Every structure is written in C-alpha cells, then in structure tokens.
Length: 121
Image (tube, rainbow, N blue to C red; front, side):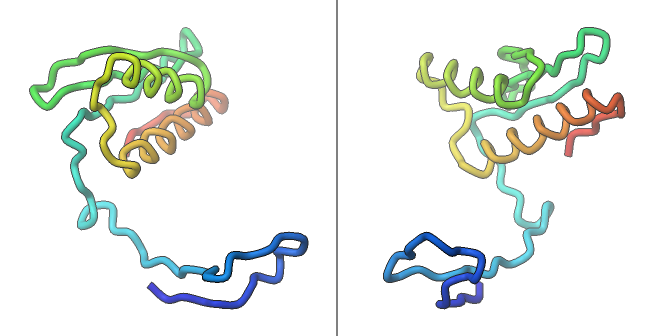
C-alpha cells in the first residue's frame, strides 16, 4: 500500500492530523481475499410482488435462523444488527462481512426500485 503525505486539494476548511496520510489501496480479489465469517451467512431475495427485500440469516449447518424484511437497505441492516446485539448473537464478527451486507442490500434496493433482477455476489 502506497502512502501520500500531502493534504488533498479538495479539503479546504478542515485540518488534518499530524500523522495524516492518504493510503493508496491494493486491488481486492473477491475470490483469493475472501474470508468466511463463521458467525453466519446471508441469503438476500427481492420480493417484487410485496416491494420488499428479504435477508435470511443462516448458520453453517445451512439452517435459516431468521428472515428480516423491509424496503430500505438501511432499515434492514440496522434491524439485523440491533437484533443480533440485543440477543447477544455473534452473527457478524468482521467489519468486512457487515460491509458486504450493506453493499448487497443497497444493490437489492436499487434493483427493486428499477424493476431489474438482483443477483447476490
């Protein structure tokens, strides 16, 4: 990962930390860099007839534990995280897994709005 120490030109009215740096990231390989979060995996489905998105939370015995449904990505992932925290479940143990859920839910939300097919990565 390369670093740049100068303040970006688009930052006009903000100060930067003494140890500020811009980190140029390496390209992520979806297959080689994949790490399984052993807490759970999710299956995402667009219910076009109900205008909803469903997220099935599954364990690694391939049992669907819960399904959360809603219309907006943020509503769904916040409900999942609140439920998991309230019940002291360890479904999402890595930030990468949580970021993946948010990314996929937003894709599903856009597909639902556009009337196009959704395919989970």
